[in-house]
Length: 455
Ligand code: ADP
Ligand code: ASP
Ligand code: MG
Image 1 (cartoon, helix red, strand yellow):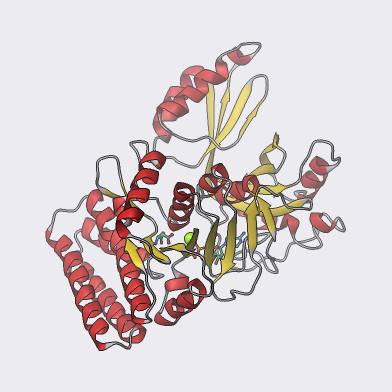
Image 2: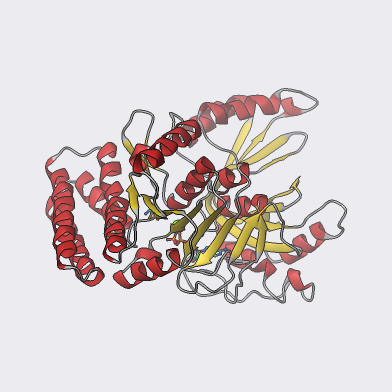
């Protein structure tokens, strides 16, 4: 069985949904199809929730009415069968009546999760009816019955595997199953989600649960590019990536993949193919245990990074110091991304600043603490094996014009991370563009960067 995930743009209109139908029926593989909400819907539902939170009742009502109208148009364009059109229009009315009920209720975050879940619930139902209209056998599997996160918001793999097996048995055999990306239940049984872009994660978790032959992530671009196409010109797709390389890129900002979605596929050794819905013939990217060729294969950048430096004479020749420091981050459940140490200081980075002030307070007992904000981690992924010479020099040279705050080299053989102030991100990420370090011609070649806003 295969798992195919289609993102928001891929199901963004009636025509796009029809193209997805062509793609999923073009071969005889049995498949679970994971769908995102129609593009723009999740943002729109979050905006609606935000309006409710701030008491803008009239705006919220107008906003949700407007979104409903778009869906009635979508239904008219998607189907030709009058009976299905009537059923689908009634379904949309019911869904939006349900959303309007939230206007009357006191707002809380649990409600926001219920509101935002409607996007995927709607897209999957509409698409399943389209398949039926086309005479295609397909069964809708409710993700809320088998996708679950635990108390630490981590996927409950054991639960998901056993529940999905049960669901599939109960549903009976079908060439195609459809399910919702992104949404799940939490440890208390409430509706929750896997965070923005979470449909990729659903796909790999489902793939892991059923030990799929292959997972395909269909989106609006022909695979993982060597650089972020939103900020750098002339990027190109990378044909092969190892799980480790892809995981680093996803975690450090390559939006094409949810930050955590590579791990479930890697654990089960299932190949992940990234494909373009708008150009299905394009080769895309294959993520497997085979690594990419070349020096710097791809670059990604993560913004909103905060660096913390703890300086203390007590570190000299002492043991247990780092442990105490890291225990503080553990206490406040704050992941640390980069670390560098000297004999008297340790610098580290975080991107979750929810508990920053408490962390700083606790750290002060160990020495002087300095905080630096508005930083970006530039993550260089490639082949940095220790027997190769000259990489550090090349990287430093390529960043000649950019002040480097921290550099992490040697932690793994496929990743080098460089911390810079966000204002230097644009020039930093273009390091692997042709003419730059990759070709070895001109390391400090001025990068051609779009005049777009930063990520
Ligand atoms: P979907 O809605 O299908 O999940 P996303 O918008 O989440 O699609 O992800 C696809 C987008 O990721 C692309 O349109 C592209 O702008 C962006 N992106 C950022 N970095 C990269 C990269 N290195 N390679 C390809 N796409 C990238
Ligand atoms: N619809 C969700 C979002 O916009 C999940 C996804 O698209 O992957 O974040
Ligand atoms: Mg996405």
